[in-house]
Length: 170
Image (cartoon, rainbow, N blue to C red):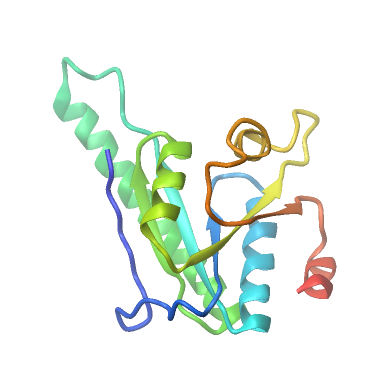
């Protein structure tokens, strides 16, 4: 259920007094807003960024366990490549190598577990969805019944901010 890949600057964890801004990496357009905001805030506060990508477990292949494992392996490789690509953007914006986390399981469970296991993570940064469907399932959960599930504050950035507006806020 749990699987973590963590990369730090020269293998070192960020000192506990530094803010670590955790960004949930998904396939939404607004995730880029959260990423840019977190990276610029990290730069202006002497903090660091952590990127988290969740992989939902490959279900429905109990009869063909090999197929399910192959799908899981492919999803992990894609997640690691995506985080690696985004790490370049974070380095360019913040000047710091981000911590990278890949977890397998239900996203809410894995996010809560990661925050509990990593004491250096100090702020969760999410961008609200821009569609008429609402802010997104994770924000809806954290603003509702999951409001007390994290030990850290959550920063919700409007997903429709321009790059100039983000820079002005950071």
